[in-house]
Length: 161
Image (cartoon, rainbow, N blue to C red):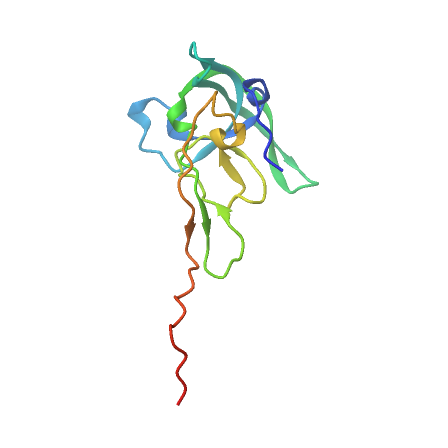
């Protein structure tokens, strides 16, 4: 069964993980390896309908959830931050690790705006373009699958002495 095609309206209100350097001014970009939970509040599109920017708001307050044992964002700031679409797209590749029979989606790079996906992603996060699965809104490339678990070629003759 193919994945559903989602629209921009499905994206608004979703929580996304944004690299902290995209939320800071360029002079502060040396702090690059942290992520913040943000909420998508708007999307900017061009005349063709393709997404050019997304608008997110940062988290303001977290609360510890005893049931799950994790921190949960309960409040967001009101100031919108505009993020270009190049940080939301990522080349989508499927790989198969040695010893694993199934293909998995390659984990996106650390500066990609990601959304919670399914178990098929290593790490559970996927770029927004993959989640939308709508090439009219945000086109992305699918590269050839890489089979890292190739079997050696069968010998031509089976010689026994």
